[in-house]
Image (cartoon, rainbow, N blue to C red; front, side, top):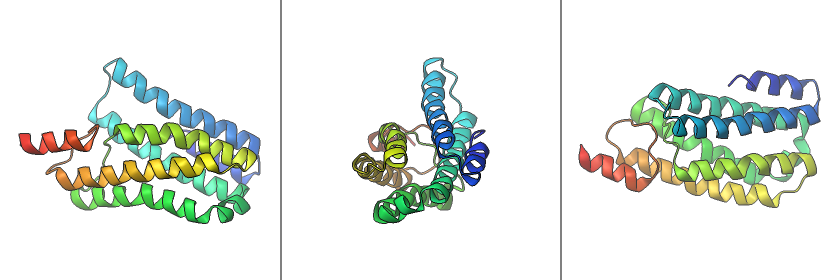
Length: 174
């Protein structure tokens, strides 16, 4: 969350290299903090919510900053960018409508897509190589379809639901 404003400032001031370095730090810290929270058993409902809001702010800042710095790349990959935006947006909207809050599931698919999308975005903007971004977009789509299915299956909000199978188990247990 803390790096979203500097990302926007770096993009606005037209510092693409620093923007990419800041983005790499932001994306890496997102992966590391979740790993540490789980392994140190410091995960909590508040932490899950903050992580989801941090992800949202980071990806909005990345998207806006990328548009400012590389509009030609965004236009060239417009279909894939639209797929990514829809993949991030629709599950959040479904969760907001059903539960009144962001989903915060942190599924295995979402973790995999984040591990792929971060480096893919850096490669896309640093060198205009698109294939990794496209692969990550497809993985993201699958992960976010699972997230929508989890929201449909759950009767009440839960954080850190690792899969649709786990959501079904939670739904049966209630």
